[in-house]
Image (cartoon, rainbow, N blue to C red):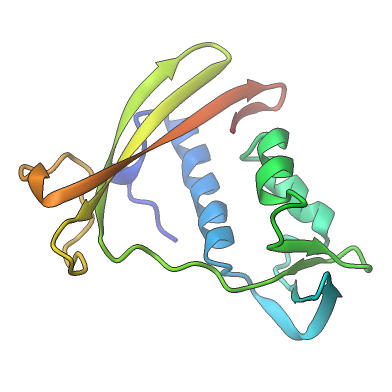
Length: 173
């Protein structure tokens, strides 16, 4: 996944890199885009999970540690690896297993803009406004990162991204 400079939020270069790296792994999670062994299956609660073979995540705990580079412990434990989120499982061997079946992209997505919401020494936030076509057909152009001249042709949805300053540095929550 390549993150274009124009698509980054209005943060300093270090935090833009944090965003880009967090985006890459979160996108990989959402689309279940992991190398896996279809023969190494772990059954839990009536579901079949496949062992992830990505060398970065030899174990479930390695995956959690990796995520903590980008996200708060609260976000990792209460969202990505929450017991209520059945996407990932820790196998009896300590390995990382996943259910598969990622969600697809929204074919009406046309672009997004960013604006700072708040800035402080311990917390900052920025808002992404995503634009989706109203035409009922898929968007066929290149994604844009400035508000369009014809906003009436789009539906928008706002997303708030919050960074917390922790002992280890800034993390998304």
